[in-house]
Length: 231
Length: 133
Image (cartoon, rainbow over all chains, first blue to last red):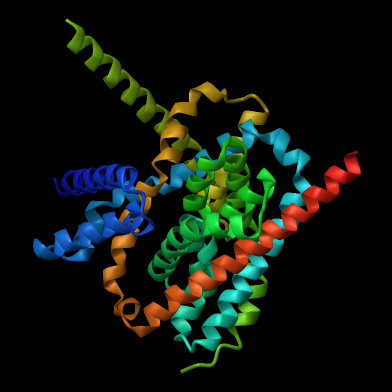
């Protein structure tokens, strides 16, 4: 009963938020900000504990699994682009993942974030299901990582187009890769506004970024986290 | 007369999407099995992605068997993040000064990430195009 209720409420709020965003496309009205906020307000007002809501909406979060599998379809359809730009894609995304990890690490040390936050923020640039796995692997808090991934997506979706404009990036491959690398699924959503090619490269970037970050999670990151000053 | 017909069309469309999503789950399942057997630190969904890609390339699976379900999953991707975003209420840390700093950090870092990725890719693209000429 609760499963159905919370699932329907979440879908309903999401649909409303999507509509509102279509009408008023301001960054702070992004469905991924507004919907969780509305749900938090709603469950607080109704005195529902967060754990109960999370349990009741597990069908929805479960769909992240098959959604990740479904990314095989755009890759398959655009295999020729992947082959043609293989070198470009691998070099750019390897650079992107390293920059994402090192800049997050350096800035969080500089800001004296707590060790929990530092470790949880490192895999923030990749898509949620994989970020959660990497976070577990390196000793972070998966729920915290999820929130950082979402912030990354929303912020990346806002600043992505300005970065592209500001650096006068013109090639579809560079635009798509930047959006997918910097803002995973939300960036890919944004890339659709540029065109199908951009969206494809963004998808490829997002998947490859997840793979490469997974690799860093098992090699480079454990070495880095050793130097985090313990509180 | 028109309405029930339209209703049936819609039900059929939703039915196809649900069936295709269930079909995609087979790959997720095999991904989980392989993960369990080999004990590798790779999420089941990522292994499932590779399995599905291989099945498509080897023509074991036809695109139209799962394309509609997959498209629905990909276009409503944002929806599936919402519950985990609500999980934020469990972390007081996020609502503190550290949370604000983290947001700033993400903004700066994401800008640098996008900038360098776009820059490297654009340079390579120009070089390759010039080489092709």
